Length: 169
Image (cartoon, rainbow, N blue to C red; front, side, top):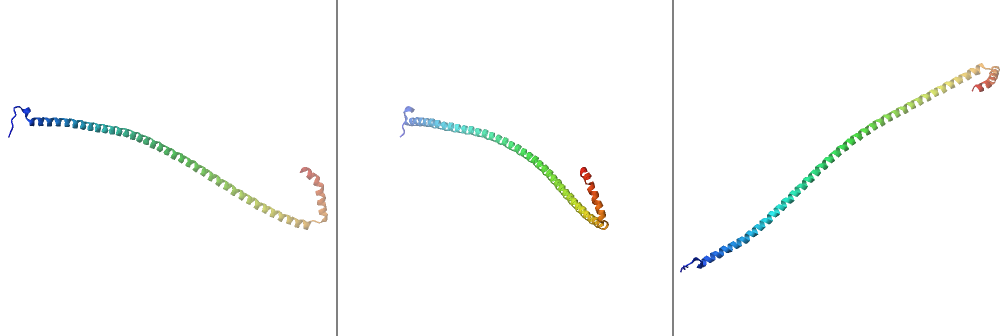
């Protein structure tokens, strides 16, 4: 049994359709406001993350520049230390060479002094031996050629020359 209504606003189907449309509009408006709020919050969060990323990037760039400057300074300092070490090594080598040369000269001088002392000692021994031989020969010659009379004349002459010899000395 189908009912025909004179006017469409009297039909219950019309009012069900109107309530359905109103319900969909209200739910849609609430859903739309929640969805836009979520999207705005997500956009703000993304914007904050981008700002944080930009800040971190700038900080990392500053740290990288600082590290580059530190590395360059350390490299310059290392090169300076190497140059100083090379110069010091050169000075030490020169000092060692000079010391070795001086030590060699001292040893040579000491060896020459020892040789001269040995020569002087040998010459003194030869002179002493020659003097002993000459004295022995003179004793033998005097013992063979001298008698008491010549001996007395020599002693008298030596005693007479003694004051003159003492004045000269």
